[in-house]
Length: 253
Ligand code: PXP
Image 1 (cartoon, rainbow, N blue to C red):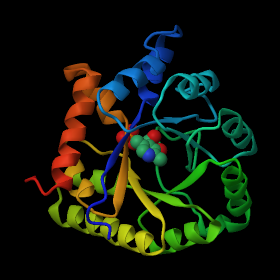
Image 2: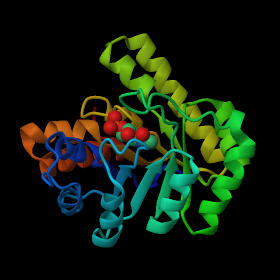
Image 3: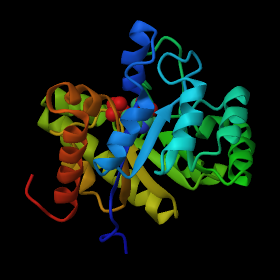
Image 4: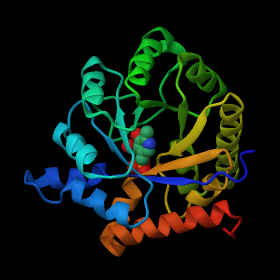
C-alpha cells in the first residue's frame, strides 16, 4: 500500500556552482552548501554534471561523494563520457536526463520509447555497478512503460508543464497537468517503478505534488537556492521539508 510511504527531499545544488562560476573562484562552494543542506534535513543531494560543465564540475562530484553522508543522485545525459565518470564516482543513484547545449535547464523528459536499444544496455551497465537508475520522463504512459521495458527501477516525473501552468495561474490547465502527474505516478507504481518528481517546484506549488502517495522523492533546486538569498539555504530547505511533510500527512494547503 503506497499511502503511508514517507517522502524524501533531494536538494539540487547546481545553482550554488552557477554563482561560484560567475566569478571563476572557489566561492560559494557547492560542497559546503551540501553540508548545510544535509544538516537542515534534506534526504539526498542531487547534482547535474552537464556536458558543458556550466555549473557542477567533475571534481565537485568526487568531493560530494567523498564528503557528504547523504545519498548522491548524479544527474547526467546518457553519453559514453558521463557513463565512465558516473561509474568512477559511484554515487547512490543516477538520473538520466536529455541535454541540449542551448537550453537554460532540462526542458523536457527523455524520449525513452524512441531510444530503447541505446538506453537498455546503458542502464544495465550502471545497474551492474550498483548504481540505481532513474529516468527523467514527462508524465506520459508510453514513456513510463518504455522506462520499465528499458530496465530502470525509478522514474522521475518532469513537473515542468505543471510549474508553467501554476505560474500562469490557469486553474483548468493546472488541474489537468496535476492529473497527468497523478495518473503517471499511479501507472509507474503499478508497474513496480519507484516514483520521483521534480522541476520548477516552489513553496507555492509543491504541496499537491507531495500529496500524491506514490511519489516518494522530490528533487528541487533552483527555487531553494534562489529563496536562500532571502531566508538562507537552511531556512529554505527546512520550509520546503515542512510543506512536503504537511501535504503528506493531510495538512491543509
Ligand atoms: N530533477 C531533474 C531531473 C532536473 O533536471 C532538475 C533541473 O536540473 C530538477 C529536478 C530540479 O529542477 P529545479 O531546479 O527547477 O527545482
